[in-house]
Length: 403
Ligand code: CTP
Image: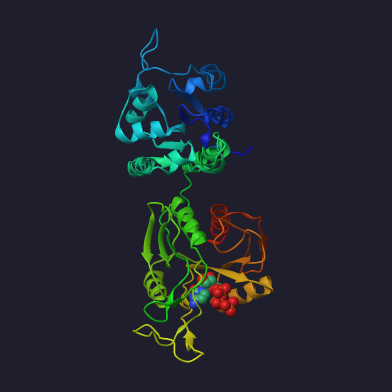
């Protein structure tokens, strides 16, 4: 069971709607109480068909509200909406999401939702066809546009027996998310951080190019983690197809080629305190870009390539004593020795080494297994973990050497 220190004394409304996944919210309640939160459970009448209010009342040590009007009292939805530090709707059915998206308030859950001044998290749960339906997608889009935070569904076996997307997020993951939400570490406030991410794309002709498998996930995770710690982040991102959310403190510059990335970084480096070079920059580009599609003629075609500019090396050359430069090294063999040589060559203060040989690590994966090597030669090895967690490890190491 995880550790969620930021949830202690937080006031949480847990709203349960009518889905078989409601049983998971019992564990969610228990975890919240264990973490020291105060929990007010609300249920729709449909939810009580799946799990009893008594179970929630026992776990949360509070009376559960099911109706706006009980026999002996009026449950003030406005007051509840103001009381909470966060509201979590879990599970959130397709029906509930539709009501939330359109301001329908026929249950206490929806009336409180509409009155809530706090951040609202919702954990959808439904069958895969309901999940895929365009009306659900539109409602989700609307809910996100109102600033609500979606707790992503899982993929797997559903109560219907079908297999697909639509499982409610796991209680531990919801706690983790909430814990991060309440993390008020602002240790990098006032710092400007430049981060490169993703691949670069070097054009051959109007339809062809040279690129690589980098997804940009590691650099995007870094941008969000540094931004959350108060830094103003400039993310220079090469072409990627992945979907991503950026923290409001992240400013993005989309670039295509190594030259574009170089230009954007050179401009921003002079005013940055820290730069992290997470991009997989192409080392070579075609010497000429053909302005028309190259037609096939002979059996062989030789492309003449020339070196791209080494962005990290350039920033290292122009690094001032109060600036930090962090690099990445992707190695298939002699990892440590090669990474240490790169520290020297590019004037890095830290280098993050990952080896393609590790299962689940590197390109496209959501996880990574790294070692962080300092200029002094000290080295820390880490387990395989989500890139967001790797980003936090890097943040901790950067904070240790900050001037
Ligand atoms: N890098 C860069 N600009 C380049 C090439 C690399 O900024 N043109 C950065 C990368 O973002 C990474 C570090 O330099 O932080 C090391 O990249 P890597 O590709 O491992 O090293 P190379 O210098 O390209 O050396 P080699 O390909 O020989 O391993």
